[in-house]
Figure 1 (cartoon, rainbow over the protein chains, first blue to last red):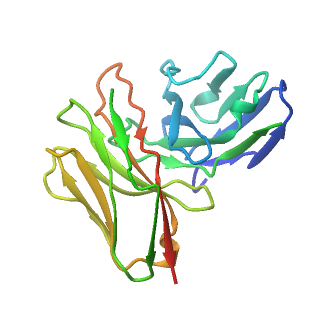
Figure 2 (spheres, chains in turn cyan, yellow):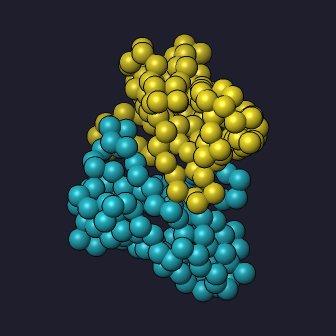
Length: 115
Length: 118
């Protein structure tokens, strides 16, 4: 595709339910990132995938959060037993290779609202 | 730990004016990367400009330029001839260069909301 795509665009869920957020990176990009952006805040790093290497999960806020990347392409971020504080915009980005040398291209984000 | 500070929560200027957004950062590293990203109401985060710390020359991209002061750890963004489409949140971000097993995520400032008035 032409850019990074994310789905759904918006997700409203009830507290305690599980949600899955999808990211489809730019074709050929080996690096993929998930960020969380709370209202009026900057971005908070969640997780990083680089090729077939083990992901860097150092930013995940709790064990309710997990992510996988199948076939080195599409990634899914899963939040189990959602809480109201999970409400935020979840942004995905991809880059050609190593961060810093390669520009990160962002998707439009998924706005998650936990009632 | 690295930190990025944007001291202006919101700015407003008239169309065609020049505006400067400030950013300061804290690091003990000598080599790193700095970025300005723009996020319009569409939520799409768009790279505006990037600067490698080892380059003394300030980066420019059309109407956008930076004033990189390494000793002062300052990285301001200047937008010349501002346009209505420049209305957005602007984020300053920092990253260390890649080394094996390093943590290479972007460190973000809180953002500056820029409003261009007609």
